[in-house]
Image (cartoon, rainbow, N blue to C red; front, side, top):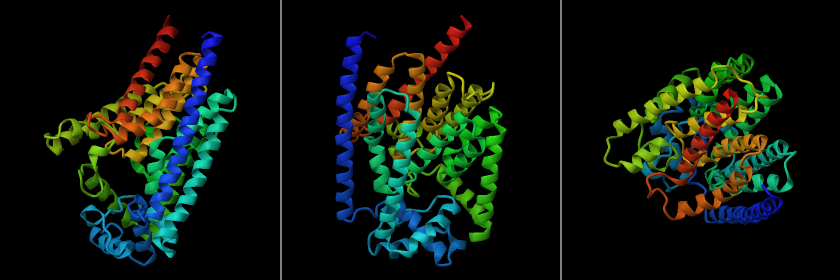
Length: 410
C-alpha cells in the first residue's frame, strides 16, 4: 500500500473510531433511560436472581421446578410478568449458588451491583485488548477498542445483565494463556465458562483432539471442584435435574425463554427463512450441522495445538465461528463473542501484512451496520446481519487458511 493510501486509510479509521465512540456514549444514555423508567426487570438477571432467592430461602431442592420458580418470580415482580408467566432459570446450579448473596437486597439494587461487576469485566476486556495490541499503531489500537465498545451486543448484555461479557473475557484470557504457555490458567478460564455450558463443547474438543492435556486436566480439576461445591451446597441431584433441563430446552421453540427466530445462528436463520417447516425438521438439521461442525473442528486440530504457529489465530477463529454459527442456541447477546474471531483474523492478517486495513475498516463499520439493521430490516432477510457477518468471516478465514497451506506446499 502506498504512503498516500495508508494515510487515507488511517484518516478513515480515525473518523470511524470517533463514530463508534458516539455510539457507545448513546448506549450509556439508553441504559440510563431504561433504568430510570424501571425497565431493567425484563432481563436475564431476573431469572438469575430468582434462582439465588430460591437457594437462599431453602428451596434449592426445587431449583428446577418451573411451577415454584413461577411463584417466586411473580411475587418478586409484583404484578409484572414475562411472556408465559415465567423467565425460567435454565442455567447450571453453581450460578444459582453465586447469585444467592445478591438476593439479600431488592432486585433493582441487585441489578445495580451486577452492573458494577459488568463494568469491571468491561474494563478487564479493554485492558486485555490493549495488552494484545501493545505493539500496534495507536490508530489500530483505538479502532479495536472503540469498535468493541460500539457493538449493539454489548448494550444488550448490559440491559439484560447477561453472561455474554463474562464468557467473552474468559475466552480471551483462555487464548492469552495458550499463547503464553500458562496451561493451568487456561484450564481455569475455560472451566469458568461452564456458567454457559453450551459454549464449551467446541473449545473442549479442540483441546482434546489437539492433545493439550495439561489445559484439559486443569479444567477438569476446576470442574470437579465446582461439582463438589454444588453437591454439598444444593444437592448432588441438581446436576441430573440440570441435564434434564438442557435436554428439554435443546429443542424448545418460543417456550422456556427460548426464541429461535432471534438467534444469530443456522437454527435462527432456518426458522426465519422457512416458517412453515416443522420444528422437528429444523432441529434435526441444526443438530446435524452442529455434529458436522464438530468434525470440522476435529480436522483442524488433528495435528496438535501449536499456539506459536503463524496460523494459530486463524484456526482458532474458524473453530469459534463454527461453534457460534452451528450451536443449537446462540442468543443475540452472545453475539458479543464475535469480537474474538474478528480479533484473531486481524492478528493473522497483521502477521501476513495482507488486507489488514480493509479488514480493519470493515470491523469499524460493523457496529453501525449491526445497529442500523436491527432497527430497520431486523430478521426480514431471513438471515440477521450478525449471522451473515459471521458466515462471511468464516468463509474469509477458510479461504485464507487454504491459501496459506497452498503457499507452503508450493
